[in-house]
Amino acid sequence: MKKSAQATASPLWDRNKASPSGRCLRGLSGCLLRAGLSFGLASLLLVCVCGACVVLTACDQRKVANAPVDEEAPLVAEIEADNSVAARKKLAAFRHQQAAEVLADPSALANQSTVELATSKAVSATLLDPDDALHWLLRGALYNRLSVWDERASVMAEAALNRAVELNPNLAEAWLELAVLHLVNLREQNALNAFERAIEESPALASPTVVGQMCAIYALAGESERGRDFLQEAAARTPDAPALAVGLAILLMDAGDSEGAVNQAESVVALEPVGTPEHEYAAKLLEEWKAGKP
Image (cartoon, rainbow, N blue to C red; front, top):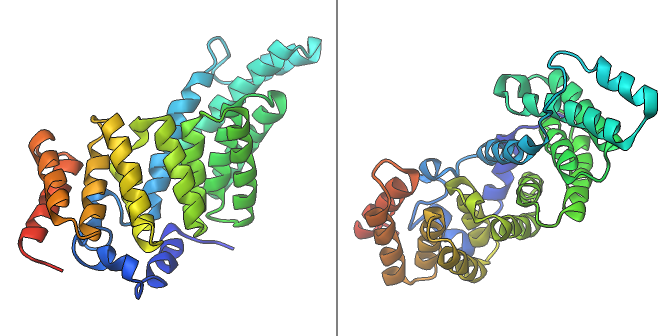
């Protein structure tokens, strides 16, 4: 059955409208619905795009140095000649590269048959070189995109991504892709666990989009205290990830600590260049709070 990011996002918001833990969504920061677009929170599709970028960054390691650009026949012939591990790895890397190129092309990702072909290439890479976590990450990411047209692909995406983190528990990009999958399927606790693990493994993944979705789940799930603790620790470890400070400000205000929230937001405004998403969003928060909005 065909689904869209918008369709999957709606139930998460709607079924929590009456929850006290959802008040930050509707009110004081306006954070996740009204002004959320500027901080990357309006659609799960934005997280999917973010996920594609980091998957491609990770998978860039598998580019083929000496493979023909336009054909794989020589690589297949090499396997037919000796079927060595080295030959299989080389063909796997070539097919991985072909699949990753589709993931990098938004117009290609809009075409079901193109995504299906790319997914088959990624599956082939995992069969040829089954111990490479990056092949499994790419396979899972493409199945994740394919689930837009066929929800059954989500199950295969989850299995592939779980295999990726089994092979390499420190692969932050796979944890982030798992978080996207859980979020789209409304498994908020699983999504939080995966988001947190991704940031622990690679603080550079703490983008406004990712931190914003985490704040939404923390608030909706009644996990604001957990969120404050995690973001505070992460921000202390990674001062060059200002999105963490913005997220912390949102959750502090949600907990009634207006002084702490304002201090966090003011520090972001002071330190981040004008025009950056973090600066602009923190400035909007301060403006709203000082105007006394609920």
